[in-house]
Length: 171
Image (cartoon, rainbow, N blue to C red; front, top):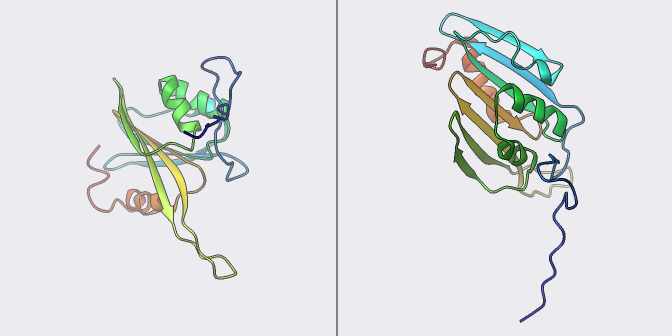
């Protein structure tokens, strides 16, 4: 049969467990937005320092942290430490070439999803683009990691802000 050559994996030669970003950087700065909500309460804030992402969390509220930009291993590592995420989860968040998958850890469920769009560029050509969205679902918290701002999450945030439907009552 034909001879197949394998390229070394991105990150070959790094120490085991070293976190690296695999994929294309799609935005300049990472942005962290934290929303805490309950039936009668809502707190929204931008978090400048990834280390501070779990500081001041009200345990009576559900905490949703949305991270836009997954190209900064140090920031992802700090967020992971704050929420006690497994190192394999962090590696998966940083590697944007994964297929869809679900992992069940002791204290959370981890999902890798692909978000597809069909944009038309200025010359009228279109092509399907995909971005990776990772979700961590734990008791009292949700973390969403997007390669760039993810429009699919906007309606959910609006429902939380307006207390529409059951989302603020469900925990």
